[in-house]
Amino acid sequence: MINRVERWICVLLLVAIVFLVFSAAIMRSVGYPIIWSVDVAQLLFAWLAMLAANQTFHHGQHACVDIITRRLTPVYREVLFTVLDVVMIAVLCVLFWFGIELFLANPQRTLGSTEIGYQWVTLSVPVGAGLMIITLCARLIGRYHREPAETGL
Image 1: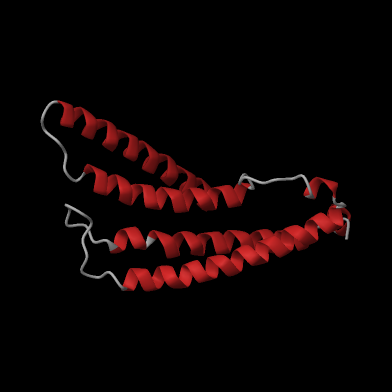
Image 2 (image 1 turned 90 degrees about the vertical axis):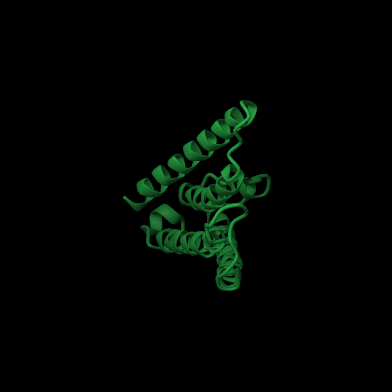
C-alpha cells in the first residue's frame, strides 16, 4: 500500500514539474514570466529524485552490471547482494545523518524568489535516505526469511 502511495506521489510530482516548466515557458514567451517556477520545479525535483530512487530499490530496477554476478552460483550471488545492500545501508546512514544536519543548518534561508523555506528542499535528503534504508533492510530480511529451497542455502 505504501509503495503504491509513493509511486503516485512520484507520478504527481513529475506531472507537476512538467506542467510548471511548460507553463513557465509559455508565459515567458508571451511576456509574463513566472519568476518562481524554476525554484518550485527544483524543489519538486529534489523530492522526486529521492522518492523515485526508493522506488527503484523497492522494485530492484536500478542499473546494474551483471557480467560478474550472472557467473556466480546462486549462493555466492546472494552473499554478494547482501554485502552490497549492507554497504548501501551504511552509505545511506551517512547521507541521512548529514541530510539532517543540512536541514537544521538552513532555518532562515528561502528558496530563491519564493518565501518557501530551503529546508523543504534539504528535507528530501534524510527522508529519501531513510525510506531507502527501510527498503533495503526489508529486502535483507526478506532475502533470508525465505524457505531454504528458494535461496539455495
